[in-house]
Structures are given as structure tokens and as C-alpha cells.
Image (cartoon, rainbow, N blue to C red; front, side, top):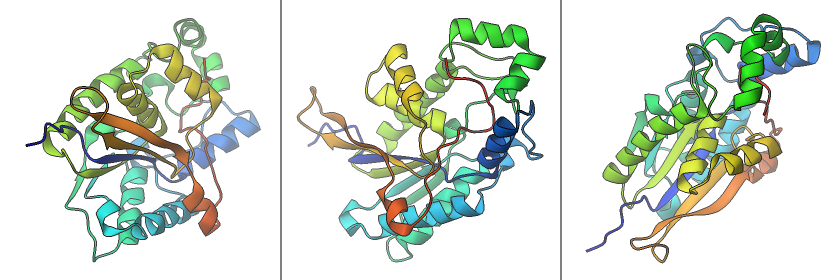
Length: 256
């Protein structure tokens, strides 16, 4: 009898480039206050490049040996993440489908509230008091009106991890989500503190369709733990000739 509570493997994948990523870059480069995108954040689609990135990653997963392919796919319900997951599943192929595919609202993007669709300039111009407060408090604890702090995101991901360990021990779980969600999962799985995860966030953004993965190691701790194997892995995209992109999502809030 095994005491293993963890999945055998977890892959964290940020969605492919979205039209929101593109619009944000245009707004920041042009010095605009507002990011020009009409959809709700949940409805923002992949760009053409984002679809190419997702197909490239799906091809990589499809080429894994059957005993190494995902058996469970969990996705943010946001369109850009769901479409990425669907394209990856197409790459895995009909002969090797995962046993489970679930949209989980706990994996959704961080909610930006009143700061949604604002660039750094827009936040400073329209909400200078919030801009100053965020600079003082830092993004880990700062909660914009109607939005979430990183701590809020971490709380819902703790709940998601409880479900994953209860329902998928021994499984190979692919999670398709968003940049902040990848960082917050890393915070939890690697037992980080505020300083360490924000240092990682400052160092670089999470590339679209990159892979961060963990594998179960029975020799760590009393009952074994997940061990980090790779971070921001983009080789499948490079091999397919898909451009690497890493723009943050719709809000242009500055890094602390």
C-alpha cells in the first residue's frame, strides 16, 4: 500500500499569446493609458501566434511515450487557456486521450478589479492613490478595489491543490493557466516566501506556452513530495519555429 498523495507529475503551462497580450504591448509602447480591447477578460482569445504556440506544445506532448503523457488536464475557464488546452489535446491525439478534462474556475486569471485594462501610465493617471499604495505595499498583498492580491489567488489555489491531491494521486496532471497562477503554484509547491517568488517574478515573465514541471520523488519528506524538474521550458516552441513571447496579461501594473 502506498502513502503517495501527490500526482506522479504536474505540468504548469501558461496559455498561448492572446490578443490581450498584443494589445497591452501596443498600449505600453504607444504611451496610452488604456489597453484597447473590448472583450471581457474571460473572453480574450488567442492570437494567431498563440494558436501556433499551443499546437507546437501539443506536438511535443503527443511525442511523449504513452506512459509519460498527461492523464488529467485541468484548465482555467478563460477562453485563451481553454483554447490552448484544446489545441494541446489535439496534439496528443485521439489514440491517447487524457482520462479527465476539467475547466476549473479556481485556475482563472488574477482579477484586476478597477485596474483592469489600464497601463502603468493609466493607473498613475486615473488612480494615483492606488498606484502609490501598491508601490508601498507590493503586489503580493495589494488588493485593488474589486480585484485580488496574490494572497487571494494563493488561497484559492490551496483549495485547488487539496482537490488535486485527493482526486489525482499517482496521475500525470497538466494544468493550463496564466502567468500569476504559475507563479502562485510555484510559491505553494516549492514552499517559498513573498521575497523569493517576487524575485522570480521580477527576473522574468513566464513565456506563453512554456512548461514548468514537477515529478513525485518518494525520497523527499515522510511520504514523498513533488520535485521541480524544469521551469519556463520553451524548447518545443523553438523546435517548431514558433516565436517566444512573454508579455504580461491585460493590466499594466508595474512590478514592485
